[in-house]
Image (tube, rainbow, N blue to C red; front, side, top):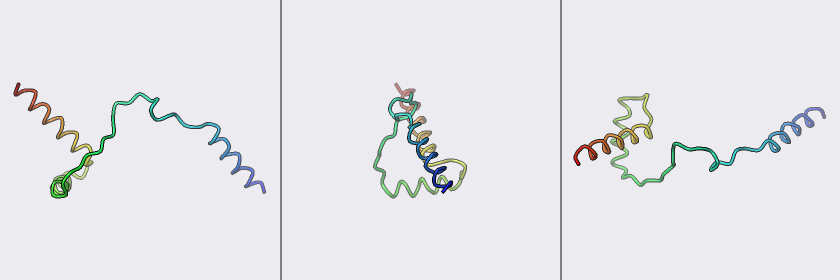
Length: 75
């Protein structure tokens, strides 16, 4: 029965400690939902295969940065 008491103690502590409210934290990022054609995702997957150390999200953010730089320098 000792195991049950330990488990209950850990569960109670976990519940009592709670967690930070997600929105109360300072954020540097914002999750967004985008729709991307499957053909583009296939091309993206092929590009990422050449650089396996890069994640899809990272690649997309870098592409956005490059586009913003180009557009800002055109003006």
